[in-house]
Image 1 (spheres, rainbow, N blue to C red):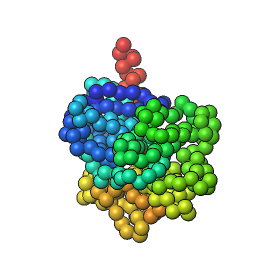
Image 2 (tube, protein in one colour; image 1 turned 30 degrees about the horizontal axis):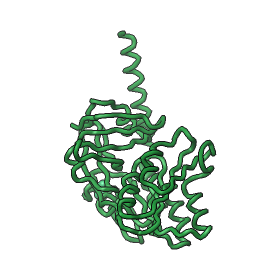
Image 3 (spheres, rainbow, N blue to C red; image 1 turned 180 degrees about the vertical axis):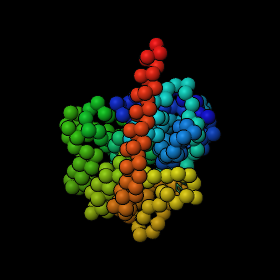
Length: 286
Ligand code: FES
């Protein structure tokens, strides 16, 4: 059992959890993830590490509520426990002194890009961080990112704050103006990572993305997380999650992620209905 030390609601659907997990904190590296199972009837699902503190023995994750399991996780509070947490899993991000690096983050990827930007900065790179959200109130962690970046560009889809558009818009502008970019790291939804990769491809800028297919064991045994990269089948949990975005078969990834969408919708409806019944029963008792 893994105790939650702190919880913070970052946006209406994104929650930060700091969890006591000394063995994971001891070995964690940028780009890695954990596989969580909230309770005995829960599924196993991957979440990127957003931070860790070896001295405190804690790890930090940023959870976006997209289905039953992430909703359950985000509903836990400080001093509650998560049943299983396995990690750190996956290969660490490839960190080196590349020169000028763009770190792009969207949704939960804003949390996941932070340790990568920090490690790249410590390796002597110039860091341009670009983060995106639909609206101003959905942006978070601007300050921690600013501290590890030479420049932080904030974008909002509705133009309510910063640059009107998405991460790939300022990236495209930079490249079209002839600015030198040596490498791009993108973390976020498939669509955002795919577009970042498509934009950088004609300019020959290597773009590393962190793939998020459905996972079960997270250790290379079940094959659920298979993706196609450069025409070769890879397991995202052990060969990744970081891959060259120019080589990823994005269509296949998107269709595999949709495999259980109807079951996921039904599961969430059933769970929410159950929660409503429990709350109603409790309020009647009171
Ligand atoms: Fe099972 Fe990757 S999650 S092989």
